[in-house]
Length: 128
Image (cartoon, one colour):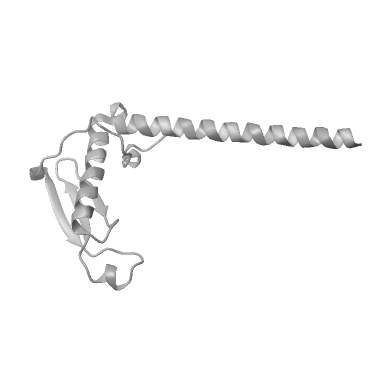
C-alpha cells in the first residue's frame, strides 16, 4: 500500500484544502547537499510547518527564497489535503491512476519482449 503523504507533489490537483498564513510557521535555514559555497553560506532553504497537523516541509529546490517559499506552500497544501481527506483526496487519486498506468505500460512492454523472443525462435527454427 502507498503511504499517503508520499503521494504529494502531483501537479494537476485542483480541489485542495486552503491554508491560512496563521496556521503556518516558516523558517529559513541553510540548505544541504551539493552546491558548495552557494549552498553553505545562504539561508535560502525554506522549512514550513502546518501547526494544526504537525506536517513539516523542507524545500531547497532553487537558489531563490521566494521560489522555494512558493514551492514549499504548494507541497504543504497537497500534504495537508492528503492528511485530512485521505484516500478521497484528488492527490491520492491522481497518484493511484498514474501508478496503474505505469504498471500497464510495464505489462505491455513485457508482452512485447516475449513476442519478440518467440518471433526470433520461430525464425531460428525456420532456418534449420
